[in-house]
Image 1 (cartoon, rainbow, N blue to C red):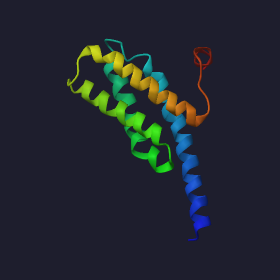
Image 2 (cartoon, helix red, strand yellow):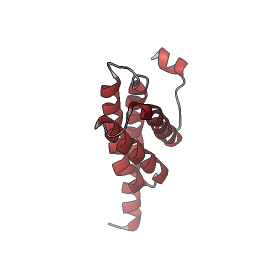
Image 3 (tube, rainbow, N blue to C red):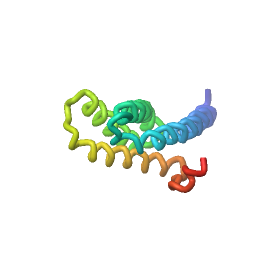
Image 4 (cartoon, rainbow, N blue to C red):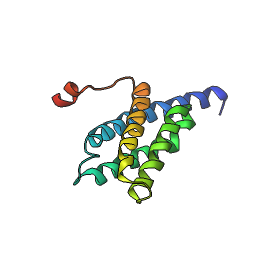
Length: 121
């Protein structure tokens, strides 16, 4: 395989990653409003953590270092919270980390839905 062929294939895989990243963003957006819910919060955090973990594992491979770091921080913080290694006061900090992860994701996928867009869906 030539360097040009390799670069073409890598670009195709990167494009696929961004497409899947958009889907991961949709999942995180859906669950982010429920993280403070007494009944749904744990499930929402688990869903967001799963997406953060997947992003953290791949983002740097495609040159998205800041996204990878944001995902890793969110993944680790949510895991600690769910395992009871941090207190309920850290939920605000988790919200900030999740928001930062979503902002980094928005920067790559090229859009951010506002609440009126989400309500229309």
